[in-house]
Length: 364
Image 1 (cartoon, rainbow, N blue to C red):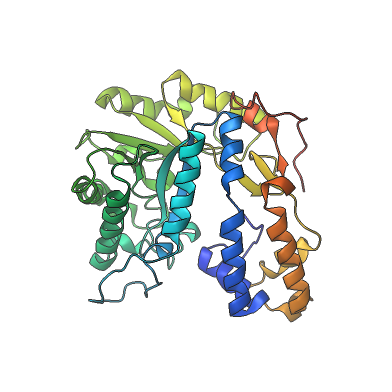
Image 2 (cartoon, rainbow, N blue to C red):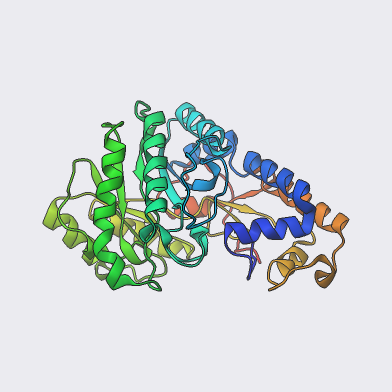
């Protein structure tokens, strides 16, 4: 999302911003980033483009109030005082006003669930190994469900994003995934009988064979697909599962491809009754999204900093003042009114009728 080659996980990117801006400057950067990256105007555009659902990725650290060491045994009681609650409530309110539904997606679970950068873990899916991380994940979902149990704007809860990557003990962990989902579902259902529960498949959300028949009501099974073929063979496993168990299937992520691929793949899923979400709404310098952020002048220097193994301003040829200027321009660039809407991306999904403008070439 930042076009860095080395700083890829949230904690790595946060560390990079501290190198560039200092601790206080980095804290201010993230506050302003979260205020601007998705605002009320973005949700209104999403609605105007014809989308009816927002799938929002959550990081547990924004909700538990503080980062606690991974894997450390602790009897310290959990608190739910982080800034994520206010951010989430703003989002839900904007979606309520626009008539858009919300799916809460736990993209970064305590301990990490994938073992790769986007779960912000240690490089191993510790949530499946450490009882403490399982307890924290269950407690977080119970608290989310308690707060939103009566909110009809919320469509449901996606308990984990892309659990158990292809790099980490598949044979050991896959048999326990459905059991963990049962535990999390019980926590949610103890306080919220109303919302859908979304169960992501293993191995990048592609291995749906880890599941048996639905173990509770109102379950939706999720798969992801990028850069595949667009024939029926690409989704035959999911068709078979849905038919065998009479279970709904959602394409939770797809995209980052051509408009032609979008047209063919979303139509393929609709042909078999699968709902879909495309990743991602807004991205930097890419026409493969609804909104493209135009890289600000000098961004290649920040990208170079984020691509170093041991980043330093001196090695990147940057001063603190120059880094502040470039990142300030970036914070202006992510505001919707300064970004570039890609109407043909939305049209490739059968939407975008109210969006005017030509189809731009992918930006470099």
